Image (cartoon, rainbow, N blue to C red; front, side, top):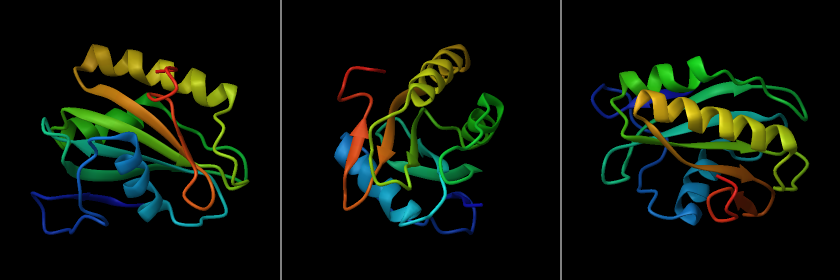
Length: 140
């Protein structure tokens, strides 16, 4: 499980900003790589949308991963994140979000409003650089 932040001695697995969904997808792809099971991670961002932390919240199976709001926001709050971007891979290679992905995103966005940590996007990573941003498609 990757958990790293700048204030500590642990280096971030990637560096950069997430000003656009493409940049966020690039950061997430660099971390997720070509895993054969679904993994869900959270990119923690400061007020300038610079990456301050990364947390893998779930490693699932070939086509599913269990995610709970408590696990998503616990580390984000400790990292003092202003916002988060959710990202997960589809081992099938097709980045089309499932109905479960959409429901989870709405649930986590509502939790983020209550906690004061905005969920600014949910990126689904496919093969060969393909991704789907729920922000870009208007589903967030």
